[in-house]
Image (cartoon, rainbow, N blue to C red; front, side):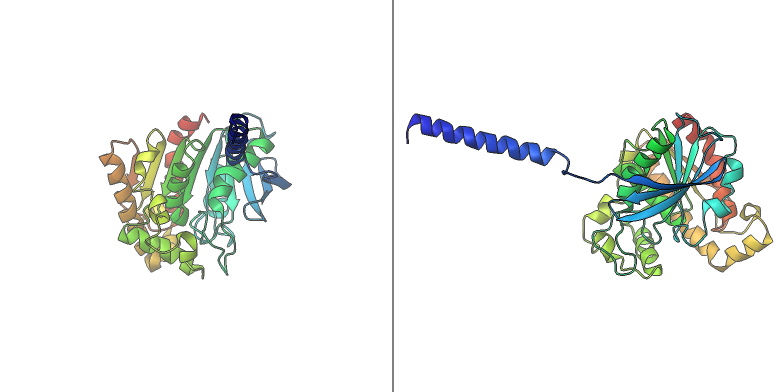
Length: 324
């Protein structure tokens, strides 16, 4: 083989390597972008925004609370729903008093309707009952990008989750570190690998009739560790963090005798579990010297009275973090 032939072969090989690296680094050709497919103006301060998710090939709607006139340059606060994904009508919008609380505040509050029993994560396999779940992709990339374009936001965000979505809110803030400056977990169970956290993360999909092992695989799959906010708590350093839980004892914060009575039939146990899980998360943050606020009330069952009270309590620190 002549010197010229060797050089030509090396040149062709080098060109092939460069092309392969370039293709690997480039985004997939024709990758679809989430887009707004409908906006219904419910009032001058409330819009129902429908966004098509390429990851899930479905449309997901969100109520968006905003000042009249939709002024540009405002931050956004995403409040995720509980186990029913707000598809059951149980939501911040209907029960959390958010319309009244955020009236006049300089922020877009995004209230998604979707993600029931999904732990708000990307599942490894399609579930026969819940279908395709790519909620991490939706909440950390698709929905914020669509909201930012539609409302001409500042691009600064905070995230809160309640009950089922409380632990996942912390996980989403870890998985997308540049997306959220502040995160709040109200009455949930952070942790996926300790006994109580694993029980909760398994029981919630099963409650919806889904196979929990379609989510992150079997318990020995590394994804269970990857999505554990307690194990990965160090990655929350630098963010504003709010944690809360009640004691499980019915009391005034629940909102009245009817709510307190309902809390005694299961809500007391759920909140006691949430308190144990949240205390574990707070202890881990404290051991890492990561600043946060943990509001542990002497009363409160798993009720909207409690959730709303803690959301209102968290707002000043979240507002400071995002410039609202």
